[in-house]
Picture (cartoon, rainbow, N blue to C red):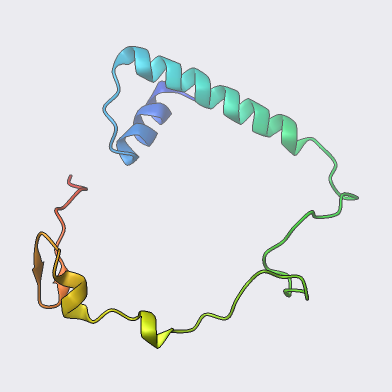
Length: 101
């Protein structure tokens, strides 16, 4: 599969990356290699291969999962949690915006 520079620019824009021409060319090559490898993997017949693990299966007796529950002695009051916050308001942490377009 051949990926175009326009496709690389599109993906870079989605990721909010500014790439120069050399970086675009390198990314085009790398992405093309990845897709070529994926095409090779798709050719493999895996019909008779047993899955090694699947998290959606029912957990067995040896599962290491625990019940999701609150531990009252570990709960921290909201005001105490916010005491070291640089900025807070209305009971929440306030953080700077990191994604802008």
